Length: 184
Image (cartoon, rainbow, N blue to C red; front, top):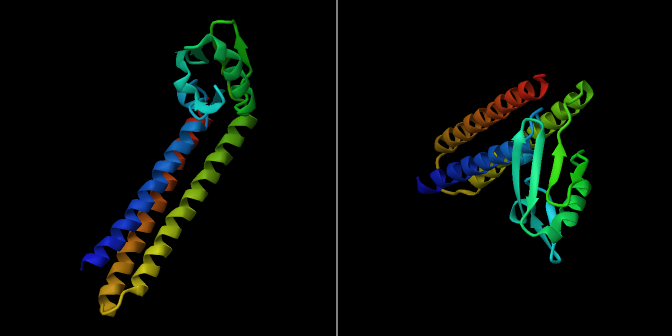
């Protein structure tokens, strides 16, 4: 039945979106090496409007422990520096008038544990979103009329199987990120 397929498809799309969000959140959690994704969410006050850093500067990684930010407009250098400081990334930017250099310090054991906790928290939030998608799907099923209980039962089992699959996917992503964070 078309309505049933639509409900299952909607649940699956919501769960896919949750996993994409988890991956994006994990990109922001640092794992030892410098990466342009560490600063991708920094917003710079540029001509009175908050602008993503990659739209006002060239962001590159010259080596494993350095991020280089070269503004296209030299007048924006102070605004970029301020945005980095205010973003609580834990980096002290150094500004040589031409570009900004971020030295990414090696992670301490304590910081690794904090990041692992943060990754676990993101994973738990994602699992909640996955379970909420299941709840929404089951609610939509209950609203349907003229569908046999056996068919409903079958679709409920399909939705539960999807939920189990995506919760396991969350755990798998966490295992990989955890290993990445704890690798010295």
